[in-house]
Image (cartoon, rainbow, N blue to C red):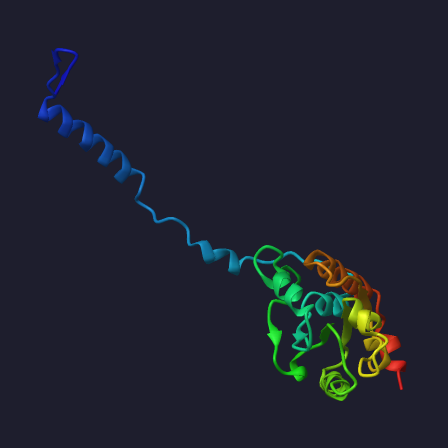
Length: 201
């Protein structure tokens, strides 16, 4: 090897000796295997106490895994699809899977104009959902019929046929507004009481 006009030569014996020392030092420190990382499973767990209520635990589970049923008859559905994409990422709220069957869902997001001809089908979807269930009315048409409220064929708000928990205004509302409505619904679920559900007729 030559650097800046000077010749450096390495003795093969010196290289072998240096490598041998490194190997011997590693070998002397490697007589025992590393401890198994799963040994902690055999350790005695110190006793712990976790205090909570049944309401808090159930409500936490319910609000953290809202499953949405597909019930989007009009244009607000495009904003809902945007909320499910990576930019807004509705899966952060545990609801990335849109259910095709109402029997597997507990949240209906009613996005768009509803006609009286379609109303029985929407009511049927709601009736088939599992209890407890919630509804978000998304957009001006879902809240009050919007610009079509005066039409004989349009339902002036989903709350005429099903109970609505959260209203998200706009025409159409942006994905951020829908996510805010979902957060409002989660806060509402967190305040539910199991006794109130038992007392229902």
